[in-house]
Image (tube, rainbow, N blue to C red; front, side):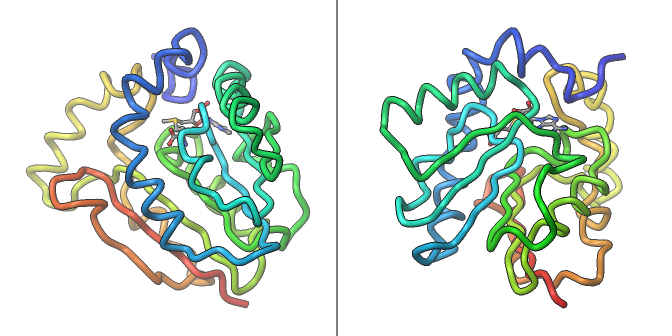
Length: 205
Ligand SMILES: C[S@@+](CC[C@H](N)C(=O)[O-])C[C@H]1O[C@@H](n2cnc3c(N)ncnc32)[C@H](O)[C@@H]1O
């Protein structure tokens, strides 16, 4: 069976992504980016930027580097950058499991709806932590498997379907929080009726 990152949503149907998923995700991404109170000159990495639905939320006085493995998704993001003349944002094709940046490069590393898509969420987390500066923040929005056994089982049942759509429902938040060199600064549901959780982690020395 195809794995989530191989979903045709991120290749053949990239041009439809904003209409189907983007409108569900965009408000939470704007809210969380604005909550970061980014300062002039800070460097931000967004991993798995997709079609770039979050990009308009970054203030022009920060430097944003955004990577994704899908050329088709990046093409959509590039269209937004060109249309809006966002000179503070640079795109690159890249792999969340092997980020092409030195250690301690970014003040903030974001991954929105990505860690349940990549084939190895622990490795992606380790890479995001590696490229984040000590004292910097790792910002995640994602769906995580419900810890309630009944709800968790119900969402697990639909995993074969969601895998085709492009994500797994099996990932638990505790898998992501295993690393004890990060401190949880914010952890809450994106909104009362949302399935998504916002997590902000601080990298400690
Ligand atoms: C659900 S989309 C989220 C896109 C965007 N962050 C958003 O919130 O709309 C998941 C994205 O992860 C990307 N992706 C999957 N595997 C990846 C990998 N190993 N490295 C980088 N990006 C990856 C896909 O191409 C896709 O654009």
